[in-house]
Amino acid sequence: MQKEDIKEILIDFGLSEHEALVYLSSIMLGPSTVNKIAKHSGVKRTTVYPVIESLKRKGIMNIELKGLKNLFVAESPDKLEKIIEQKKDRLNSMIPELSALYNLKGGESLIKYYEGIEGVKTIYEDIYNSLKPNDEYLITSDLKKFLNIDREFFTKFIEKRAKLNIRVRTILQNNDVGAFYKKNEQNYNFKVKMFESNLDLKANVAIIPTKIYITQLIEPYISIIIENKNIVDMHKQYFNIMWDAIKEE
Image (cartoon, rainbow, N blue to C red; front, side, top):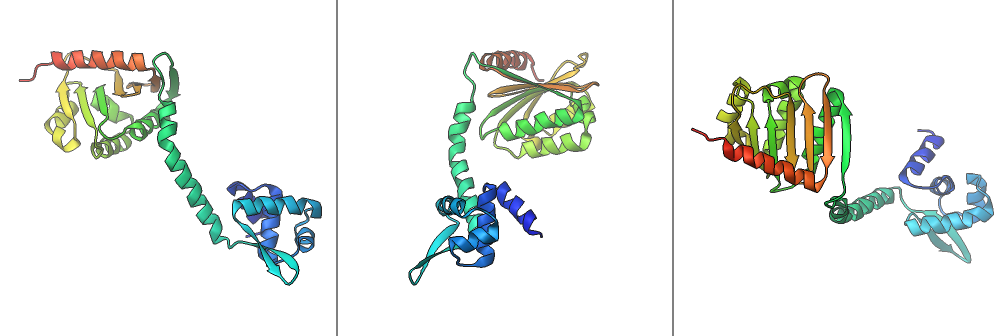
């Protein structure tokens, strides 16, 4: 790998161009004076001092005393990986607070619109990533049309979703695919009821605690995500009315 490529990777890591040049030169030179680092890196001597201080704060540069001289030495590149891990740990510790800030209040709303099969897949990836343990997940769908969008992807989605510790209820179009999932509901970790067979559902509605996902099941495929507490609560009530109205034999 060329020196320029390594410099670009260091910049991607979060260093400035001068920091990347000074750090890279320090690794190549070993313990060195500011003058030597400046000459090797091409960074002005007066600039190298504050750059070294910045690298010291980042934990990847140190001072080594040799006689009466201060020599500057780069930390092992292994330290970069440790710094990345520390940043990930800090981010992970912040996620619960960030998630709490992200939850929308009653009057706020957000609508996202997606087109095409890849757009539909995107919102189902969002569903999977948004669900938390013990969440309620409510669905009305014609699974036959739903699976026909991309059978492999959505079959895997249903199987993957079945492994989550969530509470799923679904009301399905009464056809052979709906009957299959009704018969095997325990295997897929959900409760199933069936609409009357004379219905023809052309849209799929999925409700989780903070969002509603609406997908048109016929071409052109479109999907909408709605984030609004009042609208979500209203659709939950509609779903529960339908659920209670369907009497099983």
